[in-house]
Amino acid sequence: RANFDLTHAIKGSAVYELPFGSKRRFHYRPVNKVIEGWSLGGMMTWQSGAPFSILSGYGTLNRSDGLRSQFNTADTALNMSQLSSIVQFQMTGNGPYMISQSAINQNDGTGTNSAGTTAYTGEVFTNPTAGNLGALQRRMFSGPWSFDLDMSVQRQFRITERQSIELRMEGVNVLNHPSFYVGDQSINSTTFGVIGSMFNSPRVMQFAARYQF
Image 1 (spheres, rainbow, N blue to C red):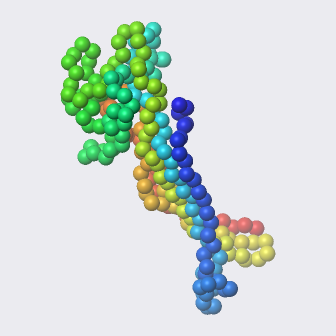
Image 2 (tube, helix red, strand yellow):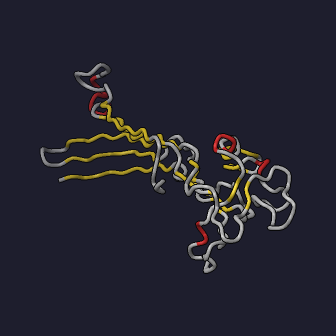
Image 3 (tube, rainbow, N blue to C red):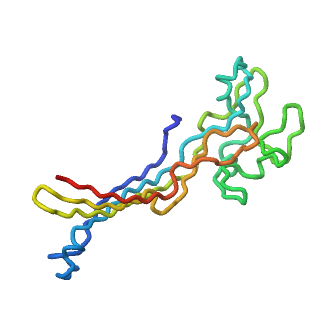
């Protein structure tokens, strides 16, 4: 899969002119000049997670320079159906993870024991042996779904035929909804399975005034 491949992506945008002011559903003559002309806008994105790999990074097949070996994947004896119950998003007391806690080495946080040592309880990933590449596909797994909603309220005040002032209030990620980004996971890392990045930023509110002439 390409690194930008998304299985599902639902996107929408809309602008709704609020029904306030003269000749509209809600009006009151003394304040019509203040309440009319406002509109509400929004953009929504709801999409499946970006693909990621579970890597070994070992140079087991003429990759000892480390430049290409960093993308060597890990080995496992499990099939995709079995892996789906292990590689999935979960919120823990230590933050978000993409790997089940049962598959992580509780002694050092990695996803495998050192070569030649006994596997720990729950170990499902191993490093490929000398002369072989990892059995897992690149970008075989998908991260958690992401959701984002941006909204705005705006109003244009007409001064003359050629002059106007537009007021805007905008909210980026207005619901302050977290969208997690997994990124590739190395079984030899002490932070294996940890989600340490986000697709979007926390809520940001901004105000603007534009004078047009």
